[in-house]
Image (cartoon, rainbow, N blue to C red; front, side, top):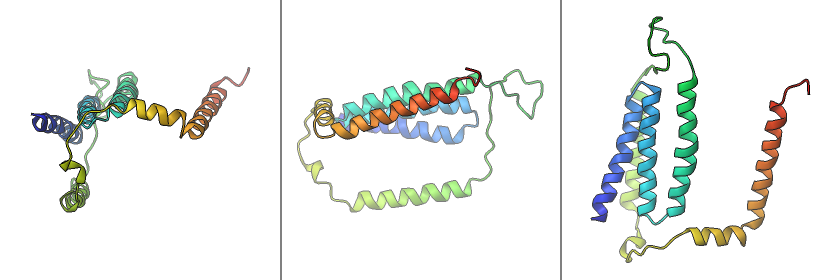
Length: 172
């Protein structure tokens, strides 16, 4: 049953990714990206990486994807081919060639297939048990990785202050 669910979510993620490549409308691509990211988050849950699944949903789906959708919806760009377009938010892309993307995708698939078939996965023979990763990550962030965590926080604070300084009007 679990293998069927894994195959279902894998098909959802791969189908969304293929649909992103095949659609010409940027807004539809964003919606297909939503399907792909949710499929990947579900695969994270099935792999007992619940922290990564929550981070995937909160950061990518909740932040980046919403930013893309708002960017597309708030950008009023007329269709250059049709001046009387009733759909100002329809941003279409022009696919130039299919040769190089297919060569790159085929090469990547070949390399990944070789790695997966020749690898010895010892963990697959063990009995699977569910354990949460949030407690482990929390303990490591507050003990072993406390200094890098604090440095990253200070770096983000400096970047936020710099962005606020650059965004303020010059007359103040």
